[in-house]
Image (cartoon, rainbow over all chains, first blue to last red; front, side, top):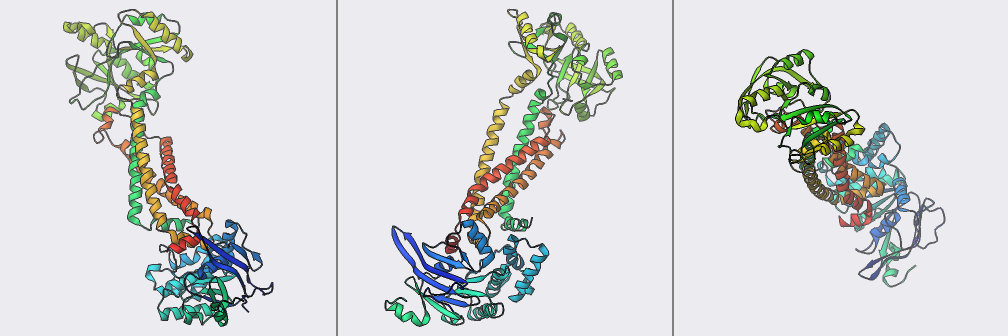
Length: 246
Length: 388
């Protein structure tokens, strides 16, 4: 089970200890995350909620190796990523992390197929092997018939599904979703959430998701709240608000 | 190879911008190519100059003549194996636009001194026997449709009157850059004309310049000094140069072509650098989030740097090839379409100059792409995605 008390065992897939992130803005030190602990097991679906500026995306960036913490450590599947060089971290991301962004961030001049193929170009797979992987990923997200469409020819929901296919095509260790339904209508958002749930249930994917939407967060196994740089489980939010920290 | 699709897709993202940038490169490189061609045209005489030939002319200037009597005295100098002489004629064929160089030559020695020109023996023998005979270069013969046996009138300028010549032979150069535009006629013909025109006595017994063949190129400097020393303090002092120096000085009379070409070329390349650099910077800036995503999914900083540089290089090379191909086309235009050929008959863009042009285009492309590529390489994913 997800733990935020720092007492999780060594078997956790993702383990953060004493994680802190401080920004300097105009000479002022802003502590976005403070002494944060997190343990996530393989196959768990965790949602992070919290007010704007609470550090949700910062936490996701740190866990995904896109940013480096000011303090503490992160271990993923036994790899301590906190002290990796930029180059090693890039290689690590390619192997272990699938990113799903709110704005899809597809490359507009590439087709759905080519967008999904992008992470595989970094591997030693042959063209034929890449084709099979891409077709499988697009099949999983239900876009086999839109393979050769450009992003501008797809709806927002379809674009986000292409993003999901791109995230899963290299079979990463875990998926990081930053407001995956934030730019979609309710129907499309529900479809995307169904798809993410399928990835968790059927494909045993570990998913960490940031969202503002309680309806979306409710689909996760567990929802964690970030408040004043500290992570708490939903049930313990009151204690944080009143000044208590576990 | 598997990333070529990515580069190609990025290039064609904004087709109008791509074609305008390619057009900038093509125009600049065609201008570069044409300037190179013109430079080669001016330097043609230098390139084909014989290492064992000296040219001796009046120290005051090339338009001032030297006495014919100098010939035998030059022959006495140790190291001199042959001496021939030329006069500039400057006649007009039908229209002053139909320019080609015409020389009065010494038929006895000229062929031995300029052995790179090939003339069939029978044609040369006919020429020797024909006081009104002329030998013409293959380029000029083709230009005016002349053939052996034709009778050609030239209008004299400083030697007035209508001069009628029989085309007795057509010469070819044995090397690619040999000048095939010249028109030669006999010294004896000029002498006859001057005999009949007493008002032009000042030209009698005077030659334009001497061409001296030395027995060994190593002796050239010594012989040149000896010739000039021999005629120092005379009414007609000489200046003797290697044939290549003589040709270079002749080209310089048209202005400092080298400097002109270098200046124009530098300005063109600098402008191109700014234009392309700006275009690449815009292209990278509008793709910030895409580059960030590439990095997020595992593309390295180095890859992103090379991707941007690769795009810049590809534009430069394609634009460069188009531009240099246009310049090459310029060299192939016939004289009636390309007026430059009237003055510079040998317009020639060599393979090596083509390669230099491509290398120059590639350098400009890489330089213009360097700063945007560096920016893309240093881009932090987190910052880039926050900007979206």
